[in-house]
Image 1 (cartoon, rainbow, N blue to C red):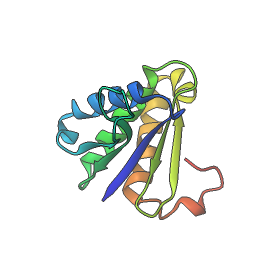
Image 2 (cartoon, rainbow, N blue to C red):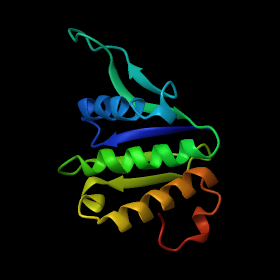
Image 3 (cartoon, helix red, strand yellow):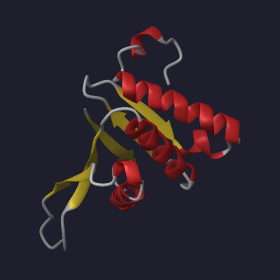
Length: 132
């Protein structure tokens, strides 16, 4: 299963590059994270990343992705958000502000919930009144 990862606001190409590097440093995700890039604008020095695509395998990879995303967001400041688009086109969003102040137990719970949502590929998303 592949899922798409966007960083918002959209003009945060450096943040998307940072997230790609962060996730690529996770052993279970190494070689599974690729950037989707636009051709360079006239006068620009290189392509601009639009999104990341993560190729997920069974079990540990979803937990590794969830852990990496939450850890990366906890290291960010401001209005940065990560939006995951699952293969069934449902989306999950996490904001840096929502995970910044979490204690260890709450971080663990957030990672477990996000991992479960990714692993289920959104199948139970509509059954939850409160979202992720």
